Length: 104
Image (cartoon, helix red, strand yellow):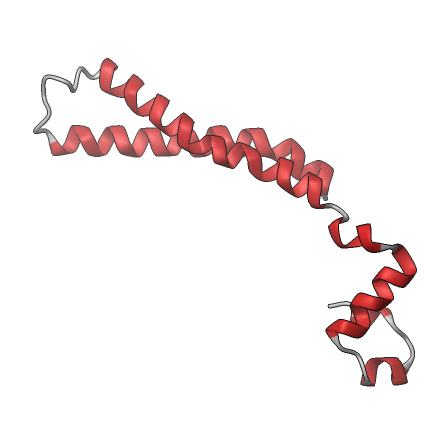
């Protein structure tokens, strides 16, 4: 991925991961390997909240539809899982969209 950054043909012919890693350390320092990593971690954090949101939405829909009484209804269970999963995905995507703009 970093080979295209060199215009010298001799450098391109002997490129290896060790050669490029040592070049990065020499030119930018050891911290360059983690450049942009914090934004990526912050970007993926709301997606981990997705599981919590799913459980909250699922319990909300179960209480609204009073499924505690109708445990045998497969259609109602599928509806709860479908709506809970969809809304938790929307919640996570809404939280990460501004971070996508910052990262790009």
